[in-house]
Amino acid sequence: MLELKRRQKEVLETFENERTTHERVVLIPPQPDFIMVHLIERDDPVAGRAAFLSSQLPIDVEHRAMMDEVTLGPALTETLFELSLESPPS
Image 1 (spheres, rainbow, N blue to C red):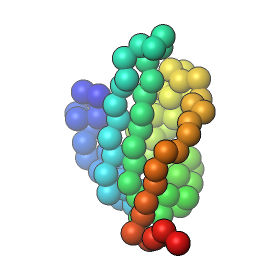
Image 2 (image 1 turned 30 degrees about the vertical axis):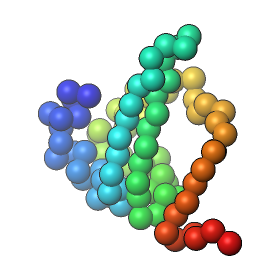
Image 3 (image 1 turned 30 degrees about the horizontal axis):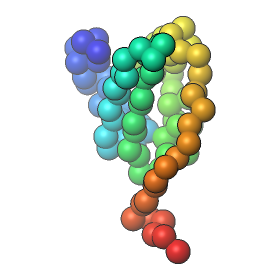
């Protein structure tokens, strides 16, 4: 994470390309393994994800490679609650 602070200009360029407004990464301690939770707020999540996956910015290329090395992929989850101003409850 210190690397991201050092490369803050590149991170902000990525934010702009992906239309990201907020990002937070947390680790949940071993149970039996660490769980990384990556929360991203974007104007358009689908377009933002596509922009990240197709980005050739060095920081994005490195990020994708690093995540492939350290993760087992997405975890199975169950959404307990979700509400958005753009999709009010019916």
